[in-house]
Image (cartoon, rainbow, N blue to C red; front, side, top):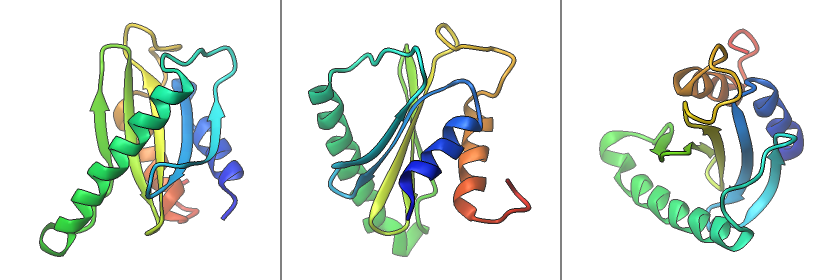
Length: 130
């Protein structure tokens, strides 16, 4: 799969997306994309630790899938950012972060709900939803 092109499509879908990346199920970064002019809040080491924690949480969700169905996405909201996590097949995860209302680029553009819809539509591979 072309992760770079996928992340470009996600980044292009909304100006309020700060950062997006693809990891494997262990949290190892496979591809990343940053909005120009945006500075990360976390160091590379802190980002790696956070991604590994999120990957472990996603594995726990997958253990419940036979009973409640496969996870579609998860959202973690902080004062400065909101991070959305989406499964990408069985082997990878996509992380998308947007600024909180206090630090967003354009309040007239999409918010969390719209970004989730955009990413789910892109991942569906259904051209009528994109």
